[in-house]
Amino acid sequence: MKAKQLEANLHETLPNWDLSALYQSPKDPQLTADFAEASKAAKLFKEQYDQQIESLSGDELFAAISQYEKISECLAGIATYAYLQFVTQMNDETSANFYQN
Image 1 (cartoon, rainbow, N blue to C red):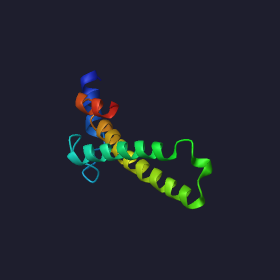
Image 2 (image 1 turned 30 degrees about the vertical axis):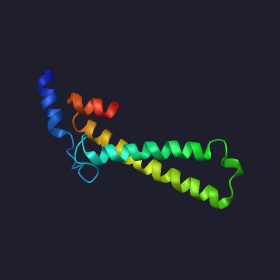
Image 3 (image 1 turned 45 degrees about the vertical axis):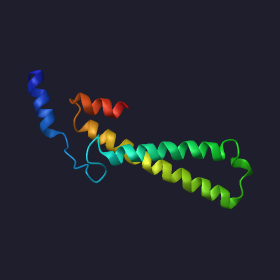
Image 4 (image 1 turned 90 degrees about the vertical axis):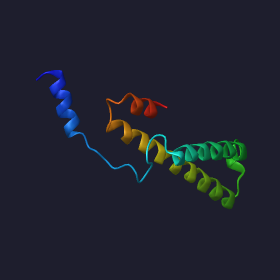
């Protein structure tokens, strides 16, 4: 088979997921807001807990872990969206750039 035919066949067999449960598009304002919030929360977390974990009480450690989980979950959602956006549109340069960033 020729390369173009293989590419066409691959395109037809790639999954096509509805990603709208995560974000509407790579330019979704909610995605931008979530990333900004996660970045802000991560900086605050670093300021609050850097070099202090071993001196935290049990309740303080629980609070730190809870904050970390919220940051991690938000970033995981963004990363999942970027990955799935890319793998379903591998030939699209915009999707590739979004995933890399």
